[in-house]
Length: 91
Length: 139
Image (cartoon, rainbow over all chains, first blue to last red; front, side, top):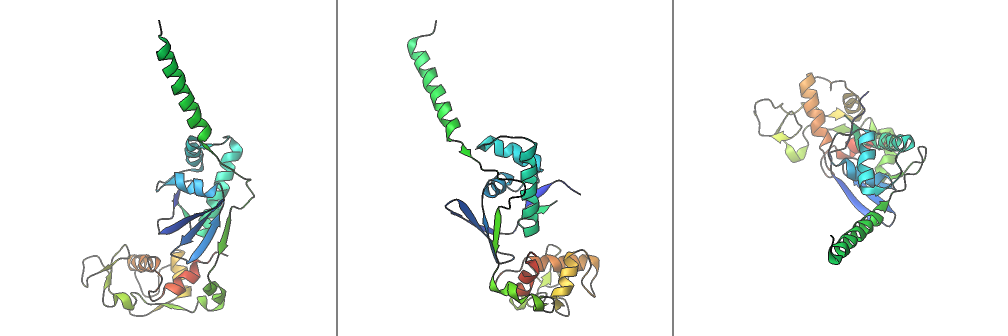
């Protein structure tokens, strides 16, 4: 199984809402309410094909966070969650 | 020897850098098991029972007569490499299977891929969108 992930290409409408972000997914008509660290993960992924490790490295450049094995596991869990929702795809 | 003003400038710069560092946003990572997403499904998600029997025309009325390019875009009839309109509507069940790697009934492998790409591009208001959107509902 590939370890590379990419944010789903179809149009997402994003709207920050206090501590959450609303994501409207045009293809499914579903609105997702996402909390940290999801908006940050999607932001640093841009349109690239990245591994969970890449995401952690990029997050560490922009955010104050400790980086450890646990961090990679958390990012991986979020990426898998986003895959199940069609917001991210495995490539 | 370093002049006082040079030193002042360096200190000022160090302060600026420190300010930038402290302005970095703290990111709450949560835990592996803590889901960070809540999804709001539109009302049509409730019609799960009818999802597999709903139909998707390829192409829909908005593009009647057009051919389907390999990437799923509508192209003028007889464009080389593009496929003619499907002769029949596909059911949600057939499209779901095609999205999982099978071919749509009565189509070649490449033709099926082009049709599925077309279906993936459907937007709200186009025929077949509601059916396709229903297939997308997680869980």
